[in-house]
Image (cartoon, rainbow, N blue to C red):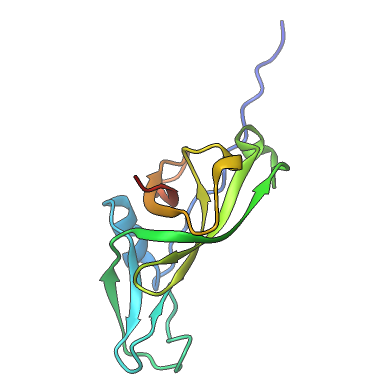
Length: 141
């Protein structure tokens, strides 16, 4: 009799005080970004100060969830055994309509079909063993 080996889990999300609002919104199907009231810069990932002017007058805004692929890589090698079944997968830098850039996996498309400039939209991936969904992108129709 062969012992069944448990599949390794992908890492989960552990929000910090300055990111809790973001992760709670993700679980509601909303993608938030920060906007600096001092200089007007849109930024992502969440920070305690503006990456442009270093001011602390930041508010949260909801993204429309639409963007386009700025660049991408197709990865054939998993970063850990937990991601082995996902290979090959596409990791992209995505310019969002609101003026910030995110890094996300491109889901629901053959990696060979991804193109620079391709319109995409935010989708939310459930992650086993985590209380939080993971924002990713898929082609926008």
